[in-house]
Image (cartoon, rainbow, N blue to C red; front, side, top):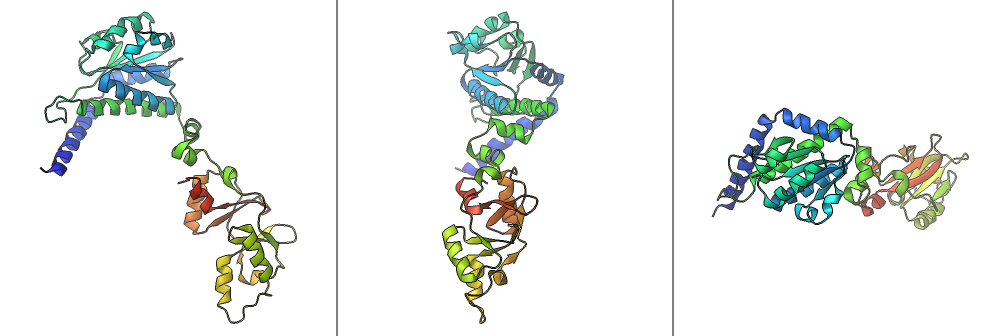
Length: 320
């Protein structure tokens, strides 16, 4: 059996479904976005079965992109959770057929709250369609399932329409990276968008030596500092150079090398520094990789050392 071909057919069917839906978006979608934007409460998403799973993902996406939202299971709603719906909320109800028994049971009660109800279904004349104030049509010509039964193309389309709503709301609210970061303080996304250089840079026990230091003394300082580098400062305590253990190893190959040499003889003069400790750590990593360095020295505007950021620290903390 050619599974690769089956996979390609599945993806093509679902991709075709999305392309056709993109061409059929109507003014109802605009109205739905406006209603949600004007919502003073929360966006409540509800549905059962596969529609419920899609609804839960939609609610999570809305909540993480600036639209307060939660998922309400219809069965739980009938047993007390309906009290979670407030007078200032908006409800999105999902049912491809529009005739889901569990969902239909709560629709009359939802309408009692006199909150806007946005239906997502293929059938405007279904139970869900009739209770809804507006219907975002979810209609597919064919499920990707070979039996044309299991929700596949229809759930893909519903999910994509939910994403489209979320993106419209983000654009309308001018939702920025900094806003996104505030909702994702943990995990890979949080690390990329929330953690700053100041959170990770080392500020204590820095290996700093003066510009008149000899190589033999610098080697001791490099070993003590455990950064593989010493920072060289002038009489005003401003950074003037860096010397790494690699610089020392390369110097050993020179015939005129002496441990009593002045350290500056083998130093990187005026090394790259950063005077913005509020920069995102992920952006600092890009800078480090671009310049092909391992250690970034953080200074003030006058080159006074405030700390250092090592590439190993960024990697250990999962910054990417």
